[in-house]
Image (cartoon, rainbow, N blue to C red; front, side, top):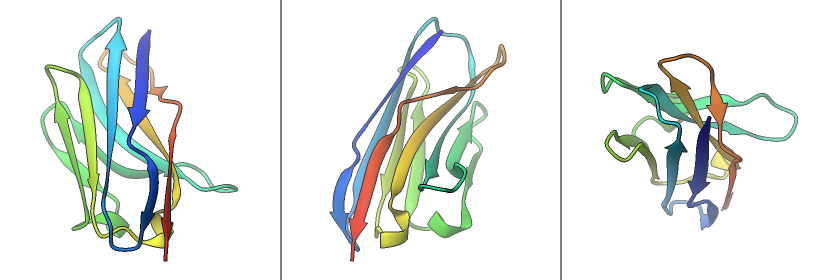
Length: 116
């Protein structure tokens, strides 16, 4: 069982930057995918960005050019650099981990609020 801890959320004004971090620890298996999802009340969680073990990344269209995802495989740490934040980026951000052995595990979430 992995323990997933997110940090770095908070308040920002439009145009500012925030950095989210996610650390996976515990019974470590090879991790196939690590990614960030976000959720606003009344809506499902949606992909923000993820990175596969191969290094291939995928981003939601709404964040391309503004957000950058990176992973330190030796430390099982995932970072999301969010630049030029917009009010529509306001959401709870969740770290999602997919071990190669199967199963999906989520962190507890971190709130990001962007004011105009």
